[in-house]
Image 1 (cartoon, rainbow, N blue to C red):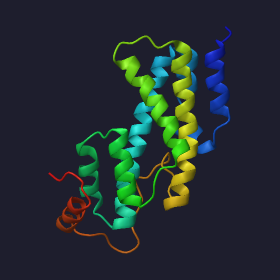
Image 2: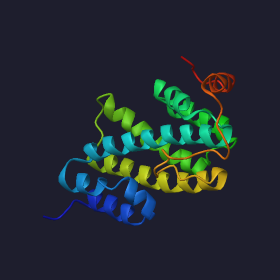
Image 3: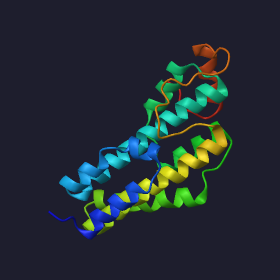
Length: 183
């Protein structure tokens, strides 16, 4: 069975991304081929949010020597919006997410919000959202590598600081000073 032009476009964009992005979003092709694009859209946003969360934890551990358990607690405590993530990224890494990458994510998120609020979003537009997220992943990965020598769309669960990390109480105070919500 032949795929629609919009689904084929997603496959073409996926094939043009880096191997790291392809591995991180490895199920998107089967989701696009077998289901409506909205299933792939949900999968993509879930994976991106997970990567954002892991990146903040890894940055806190590597750059600020935060205790990993406390950093995870803080990051898992709240699901942050794009603006909150953008602010946290600046706080943790001391750099700004490039506008080109941010624009791809913001455009995709606007379409997702429209879809989630019940507005009609065509399958073609949903496919474009998935394409934008794939392009965002490549652009953001490149920016984070330049800023912090980390790949946000890879396994960051084992990152360790040079030397020893702070104890839990000291980490809480440091994170509180950085503006993170502390329990």
